[in-house]
Image: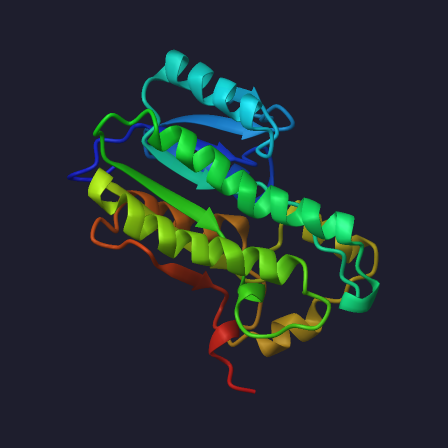
Length: 240
């Protein structure tokens, strides 16, 4: 993956669609071996382990299977996730809130640590997916925004803890991105014009642009760890 990280086998969770699929495509273009961890098969024939990231036994089995097939996993991008409820905190389902934290936070840690347990001294690089909703306060984001903020904190904690093991841990916080999920929202009436107007670059991101940033942190930024890069067209830089 870089001059000092000989990583050629990368797991991409949630790699069957959206940003995850764009990451898979970019890594394959760079010559890396990729395994997708997802609830559905990758549409392009990329080897896929059907696994729920919150199921510890299933994660262990998937990591072992992928390692047996393609060698030690030395790269990880965690693109799996579910949407928030988009309702005021007073109306949120606590069961759904727990599920959101389980998927985003527990699922990220679950996959990452099973990979680390099998490195045996081989350097590695991980990129977790946070969100611009992890920055500051947002109405109706007391579930998704806080879950993604927890992922950002997890990134810093693991970067410190795993640096002696030769593992870099970073995160990307995507801004509004034209994924299939967002396109479905647009098709159902979601107006992206106010979002584009507030964004300094004046548009939504393409999944490939998120993949470029993710792969930079994963494969090139060899002296960067514990950081979260907002890939948001300048959204978080706006002061009002």
